[in-house]
Image (tube, rainbow, N blue to C red):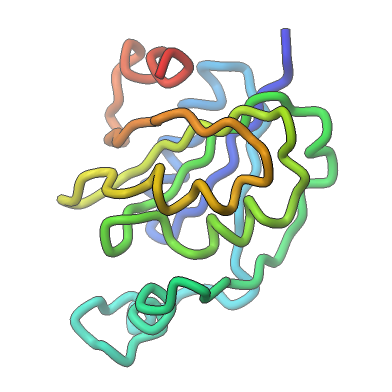
Length: 156
């Protein structure tokens, strides 16, 4: 069986909890995508156009520096990438993560959490960052995702 990695970015802990559940279900390795500079509550104020997240998300070319590196990326064939939905898409740190590795011949399956948004334009938005990987549709899941919902990630 090919090795699976569950890589995730989480600010509030919601996506982290879901990522842990998914990693356990698939007996996968777990990797937290951490920004060099952690986000504060003020950074995440989407009502403030001058907040860090608003500035980042309003600039499609913006990339967030990542603190850590997945040392054994070449070992994984399938990478499930989790994140909260920001402005209808993945936060830019996910693009940074994907662009940091040679993903040739790998399958990327996104999963997202949200307080009210849909998975948005994930396919369109993440596609250019994939470096010859295959992007599956993925899913929007809650922290209370059922076993059936989690198992269907690989079928998407």
